[in-house]
Image (cartoon, rainbow, N blue to C red; front, top):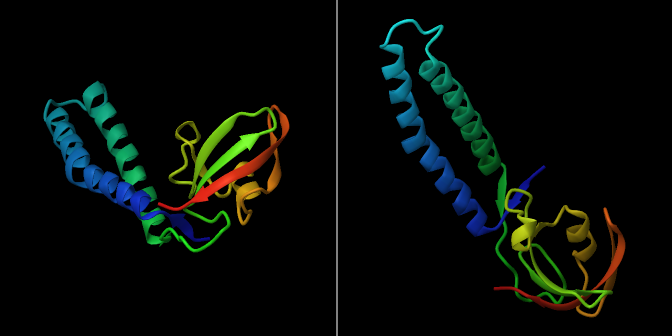
Length: 154
């Protein structure tokens, strides 16, 4: 399955990958080498922790590399009058609460920051809808109706 990313999201993952490869990993390798030079590795906490941290960094490098290899960079569209990937959506719920969401891929999602995945229940409900549409969203606190007030692409 393709991994959809905004251009900013792809850049952010690339920056993290470069940081891990060129800074963090090199630093931990040096620390492990210094700890190994101290002698007995079986009871050397710095060596054991360093090796664990190195495995975590390598695991994250593999994960990001796979995500970027399968990435489909989606440029924001401006011609549609409906919610698509990369849209900013202003909504109002049945209680009058107004919210804004940015529709992104799962790797970029941060609900606390208003960045929701197009695969989330809310994201799925909003996709391909137009201004004025009312959608029902099932959430842990129960079902709620949300009206789309505005759609914009920046």
